[in-house]
Image (tube, rainbow, N blue to C red; front, side, top):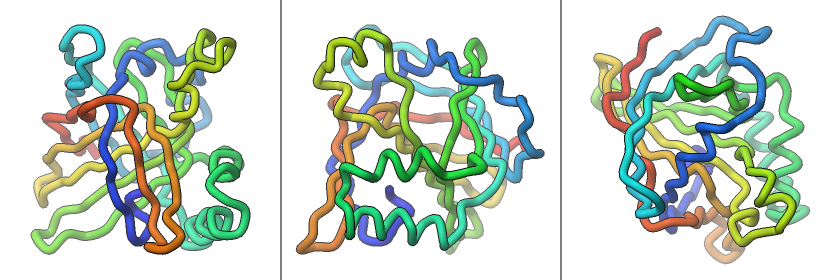
Length: 198
C-alpha cells in the first residue's frame, strides 16, 4: 500500500459503516503495549448514506519489518495481486488494531511509518477489511474491494489528519512497477483531530 515504493493513489474510498459492525476481537485481547496510540474523528464523505462522524481508536503495537514488506512485494510480482490478501492475512503477529468507540477491534496486519522533514511522521497501515454477511453470501461488487488502507500525517506535536479507505481494491502496474489503489466510493473517510495519545 502507500508505504511501499511507487504508489499511485487512484482514489480513496469511504464506507465507514463497516467498522461499526465489526465482530473481530477486543482490541485489548492479548495485545502488546502500543508503540503508537491514536484517537481520531472520522467523517464519512462517500456520499453513501448520511454524512456522519464517528470516533476511532487506532493502536499500532509494532511496526512491520522490511522482511514482511519485501515478502508482500515478492508475492505481488511473482504470484500476482490476487494472492496479496492471503499473504497479508498470514502476517503474525498483527501490527495493531482499529476500532470505533462502540465496536470490537479489527486487526491491522501491516503498518509502517516514515519521518517527515518537519519532524512529524507519515503513518500508513493496511489490512483485510471486515465484510458483511450480505457481501460474502451475494458476491456483491463491493466484495472485490477487500483491503482497508489508511494514511495519516502527524506533526511534531502528535496531532494531524488522515484519510481512510475502508474498502480498497489493489492492482499492480507492471510497466510502472507500482501499486494502484482504487476506491469504492467518491471520496475517502476523512480523519480529523488525529491525536497521538501515546
